[in-house]
Image (cartoon, rainbow, N blue to C red; front, side):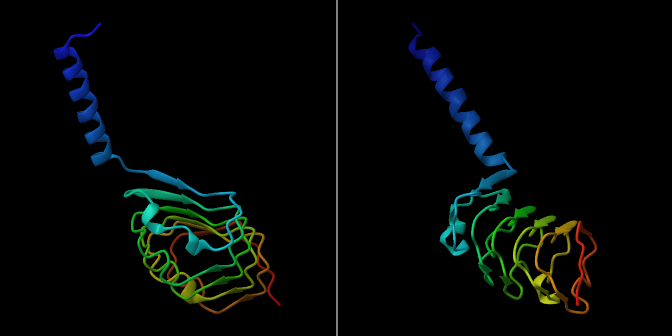
Length: 157
């Protein structure tokens, strides 16, 4: 059986460890994948832990990525919206998450790619758009993107 002093030391150690972990932890992964969600706005952005660097939202049934919805995710580096039903991305939908490095939009229903989809994505390294229904790429749609547009085979008419 532990004495009172030993218990206090263990409690203090656990408290300190918890405090340090909470204060300095980075790289949280927020996972709401494969939940059959139909409206991305039903996910409360406020429920993302501070310091979230990855959001896994693939395998749901989102149709639209609205403007300004993703504004409060300043530390997101990887956003996975693949395997949804996304057919529309509002202008500037990703513009307030300039920290994003990888954006996965594969296996959706996008038909038109426009320049205003990628505004202010200065750190974007990889953009995945494969297996969509893309038939139109508006001129200059990828202007300003310095990263790689990976695994995308467009056959526009």
